[in-house]
Length: 277
Image 1 (cartoon, rainbow, N blue to C red):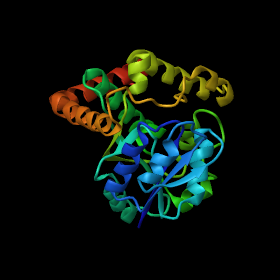
Image 2: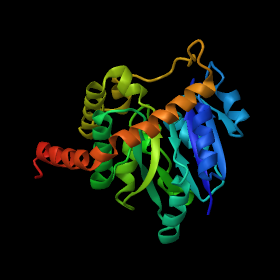
Image 3: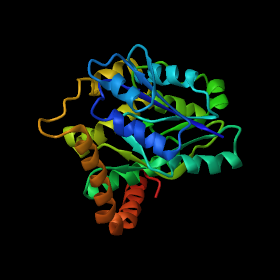
Image 4: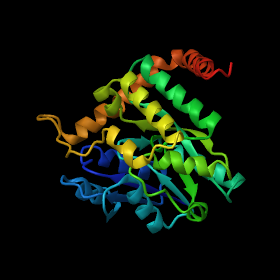
């Protein structure tokens, strides 16, 4: 069994090296970067790292489907460009494949590369959603058996919520397995927009989608990272990547003692809000 990693990217020159290299270190058989028309060095950097680079019109769903159709391995793992795989992640997929190769679908626990309890709360809430509702999001590293994904018809070609829409369809046939991973996540959108505001936006968008608001309309309310990445003066790309990995390690060490309590709080809090307790 082999795993193809598909990474959609648009102006991610500052982060694509870390994403691609983590996939190789984790044991990917092939890494496919699908560039949506970047105006920076995303495509060239990905090629330098050994990735097979495809180009197509921008749009995460379109880019992911483009890469999935080109993938050759038994399993296709979708990894966002601002995420990076833990070294044992793909090995965990190998073990699950032995138990349920037919309609394999799953994702990973997140590790947001930020220090502080708010990030541990976010991780716990996202883990709860994925396990209890069976709806992991794209930044949790969704993976499928390639044949099963083809039977599903790939991601719906919409500008937003493609992961949510597909997973709601998938769970009717196969409940996703959530592996320990971790999948490390860049905290940039929470840092830029504020953790509370970003989380509230995500919840409102998911609720609106559930109520039938079209993804095309919802896309107008979701800020996307589309500007070319510029590395700050005096900070080489390699140093920036090393700093991000160090933050991830330190956050794990600093907050490990709080994780269990945080998870218990988050689950009970969400259940209370939903009236399920």
